[in-house]
Length: 295
Image (cartoon, rainbow, N blue to C red; front, side, top):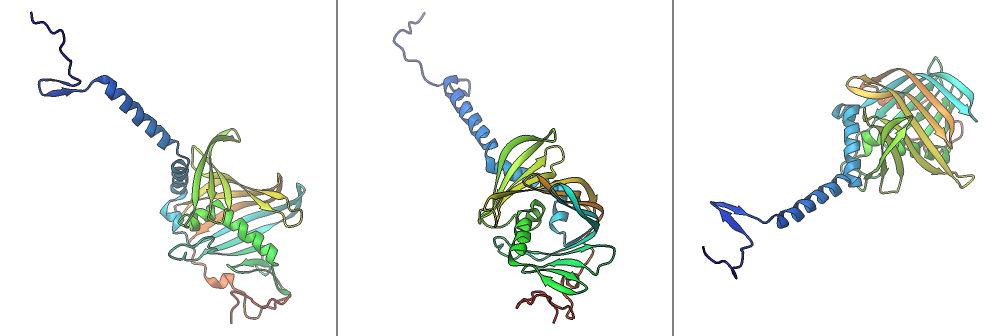
């Protein structure tokens, strides 16, 4: 026998050509890697971006992003203090404009015509600068505050954000975690633009569709915050695009508007004539500028 008293054991050894590393060095490295992966997996920005991109794919992906126009037909209801205050047949025309490159913040790239009633003699018209209420008497321009309400509602709309605003500089998307909405698990995400507009969107986990959005507006009269909620449901597919056929809006917990679609069509080729005042239209309350009016 050989005495090995006093000999120092090597920190590493080899068996044949295999190099052995002591386990006390391997374990801390494995733990560190595991912790790093967990931290990355729970990163609110990365998780929020994934939720949004999964939702966009569920809505149609490239087909959704290439949507040029949309026509919704159905029944519209308005409410005041939870009581029905108006109902009508409704037909809503939407046309998307070409977004600038590079993208700009708060780009308003949608023109809209809202028709109420069986014929189309009375309608509401919105372009990127002005709104009009048109009847047989003529076109009455929207006040600056009313048009601003429309503009902010559009810029906070998650479906408009998906179609037109995701590439804007300074756009922040962060996960808020998992919640229950109508007893269904949903992922909640905050979407914030560089002008500090924030909308919280709830995505159903099983379908990835946005089912609810929430944002706040400063009331010009009371100076208090109004809670603006939109609920999306009854998604259906047309031309490879999934769109909610029932939309409900609430303000401070009170229902104010509902739209029940009976048909939704995309990429119909609707032209700018649908969103432009005819030259013969009388302006009821003279506005010095009438954007989009034909010469």
